[in-house]
Length: 242
Length: 242
View 1 (tube, one colour):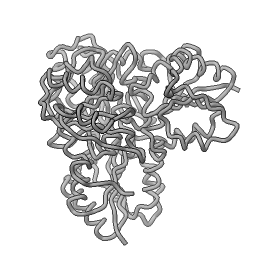
View 2 (spheres, chains in turn green, blue):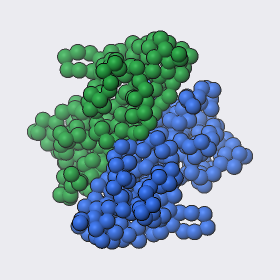
View 3 (spheres, one colour):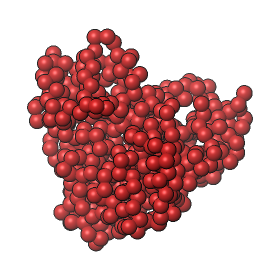
View 4 (cartoon, chains in turn blue, brown):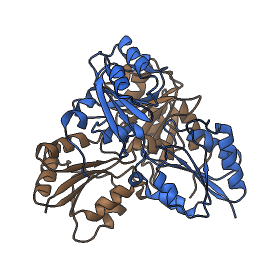
């Protein structure tokens, strides 16, 4: 029997946003190697004989280093097992899926990559914020960290999505203003997006860091900057169906 | 009985990339208002009593104008029907989902937005190209058209994805070089991504327009620019599982 690895995007946290392909592969898995930000119900429903290896970061402990994750995937597949590597969001959006794929290919292990709903678009959407909208924004950029901020378009009509940006929110907002964005430009921070715990904090580049601090914003959260933030449910009062 | 509208992302064209929520809503629909770029199998499997309204662009005929689509959604829901508005990719990624949502809200019609797998990430992925990859790209930008190209980062370490960019490919490549990208920067054009007809054409900003013309590249296609194109299956010879 030949083992294989599937790098599967589990979406932003809502089990209903998992794809048919992801479900089909999970149903075939002998081993599931999972991250922290994966819908827990998916794992709870696995048959008892499926082995779950959690390589995600947990409070108080460090995550398993990437090279060790790569090694686990290759070794399990070489032992003839069907391995699903379950990742929050999409494997190729800041998810290091490329590294895992290359490690499998280098080892001669069959590997499939299954896209998932990315938090970069779905979490703003869950707060009522479309990353593009006619008359407001024709394009968007997704980054993590600060290195690229100075080179990005500065208009409110180009949406900026920052992933993993809570800890550095104050610096991000200051940098964006320093490099040409208006201090009055709207910003939203969406915590625990697409889950029942979702919370949206809205402000401007000038005051979002103070507002976030005041309410104790914490990871995981997605930061959205641009005119499209005006469409957020937090501003319009609209909601989604129960 | 109260009608409702769900704006549902159908993903990039592969039926297996549809979410559980999309399938659940389709199973409840009285009316499905669909675009051209939606997996045909999804529509073929609908019960015979579900009415399908095709508002997409077809060769030789014009698409239904946006304000008429909005009107159809509102009127069907007001007549007490369960309406699924099925859209290729994700409703909020250049899909005008925001306009449809606002039209429903303005009319007092209950509306839910269900994200879909966006072609912007999944089509490059199907060609082996991760939009981000450690050491190659830490962020990415998605645009359509030309207006934003001059203001974007110019390094190969920031991936650019252009949707609906086939007709304007030559102008896009020239503009990017004019505004600072290297003529040697790799580019891929992925036609009919995530379908059995997928075809990948790889080149550089200097030659991609000629290469695409030589092989007769046609819409729908996704254009990817940046160093991550080096990881494409077309270059590495790797493939995906059958």
